[in-house]
Image (cartoon, rainbow, N blue to C red; front, side):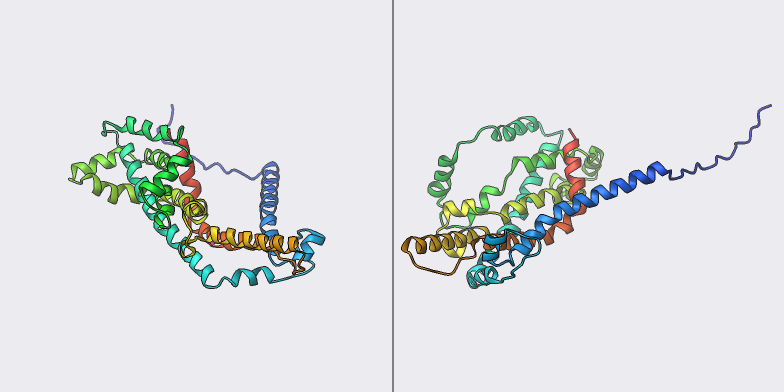
Length: 306
């Protein structure tokens, strides 16, 4: 006679075998080596920025320089007010541009995400079509400079980067992971579309907002091309363009002195390039740890969803 009593299910203990331990050891070793390989070039940039120019020409770039020098940093800090102003322009441009671009991108993605929006597919095709064809540089320059009259105006650096189809598609695909029942229940409770967007969509879109926000912030922080096209006033130069002009001025002065046969001290052009890299990437490196936990989740969910 079979017994009606249920037999207690004993938990299965999984022991770590020798193969698994070896695999974990090899995996951690490989990851550690890859981390070191990725870290060494950055360390060379930092140490190279403290290397004397003569040592670079004589010994090349070394992880531990033979001759240390602060000449490149001295030349960078000689800018003083101009350097501080360039940092200020870039910081304001990055903060304002990232906030406005996130607002526009998230609202557009929310509209394209809503299944009850009748023109959703047509608008999606319209956005996608702009990634295949463009009017070219000349019509775009005429639009910004002549018709919008944005020469020597900070808006010429702000407006072109506000909308990115790539960011909109990432956010729309991420929103597909949010159940439609949340939106429907909010509608039943009497919430309008804007309240649903503010109270439900945005709080649940943290990983996507952090990921796209990092992309946008990097684009604005590295802005120099629009400044080169539309800016002639030094007060509006962003950091990247200011460093670019400073390096060009050093190269031009060294070339002019060589052509004139005038002996001048060696300009630290090579080490100054590394100083530019440190000055430009430092703040972004400090920003990345705050969004790292959202970055992987946001980019994977946005990429997997169809």
